[in-house]
Length: 64
Image 1 (cartoon, rainbow, N blue to C red):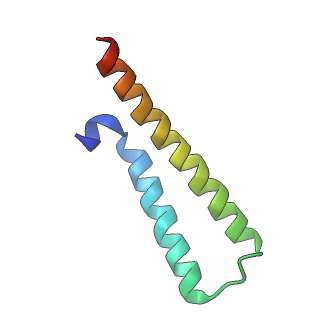
Image 2 (spheres, rainbow, N blue to C red):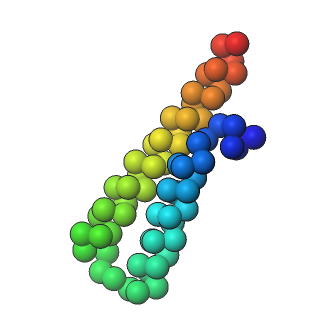
């Protein structure tokens, strides 16, 4: 069902961002560095896309 709701590329992007965050945590990089800010902004954008796709899916299901 999840594949029907959310496009595969968004899941892939979310997975990439998650594991990049885990890697940065293991490397103990300072969270104030630019890469950390970039990672967080990309993660938020990706989550917003996923939420939007879920909303669209249920709107279509309800309005049919």
